[in-house]
Length: 451
Image (cartoon, rainbow, N blue to C red; front, side, top):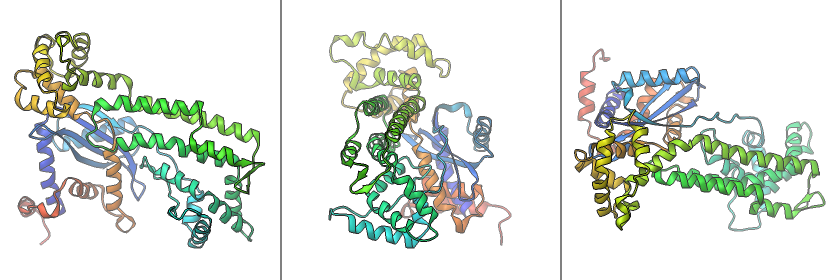
């Protein structure tokens, strides 16, 4: 029955995929509860009314993260579903190595109920703000963009309680782990780094929250990335509010009456590491949002978005300097007639000016529904922008879905079964809207069923 329901859901997915001339592919890697590497795939395409939709495609086992392995897995998945791989016009992926896990504060307290209760009691005694909620320590998840920020916030808010708890435990017998952790967190480097991350991750997470949207407007991406990079560069020149406050409260090698290992060499070490961290984040943003590709998508937005159309006579020449660049760039991958598109652009601009109240997506849908014959080349560009994913957040949600399905108690589920259950959960209808007819028909048509 799971196979039948999954196949029924997949039929609706393939209907959209087959309708679309272009597809945006979203991929990312993770490992499941049994430490098997998996490649999660999503497709951004158009529904039959030419509005963009996002669908789960597959979650397949891969032996490693090598490019040749990933390409082969994608090819096999597309072939098994009879999807032409040539339809892929854009790709979004997280190409970064996921952070590892090491022993530390999170595991020290999370692995002991006694230790955690002692920490909680101390925290409640130390909290003077009645409106401040008691925070739990949070292990940063390898596939959650926002989890590091939550973990840092919890550590900073609970610093006094953590310090005091470890100090108390370290005084007892046979407590080398508590002593080791205490020595780490009582350094000025640890305290300054925590405050620094609290400031920086506010900026990074603001960008992350925006990228949680499935239908993020491509036109907004470049400005968002640029403003984030500017803010991060600002932190190279000036400390953030949390770090400034912490510096002001360190006196005579003490922070809020707690002794610190405070040396100039440690402060210099922190400053060098902070600068390198900010530089690396900016470099990663530069690599992740490759400027040339974003520039082309942004130019298409400038040329085809009704809100950018001039209302005066300058519309006659608007975009003429950028149009040849775009048409030349995409004519090798899309069946664009450069001469025809150049001739048609003025009429298109006049139409766009009449529709300035429409969003880009609304205008794109209208062109694809009503004017694709009149403006076939621009219809291709509109579709390209509609199906182009700018974030791999769908895969992040897919990892969570996978981990809810394949748990310690269900660790023997096969990859194919997990993928089918993910498809039903993410793309299947709500229970109240579920029509079982198609699934029952597929179930009854199956051969070799158990009697």
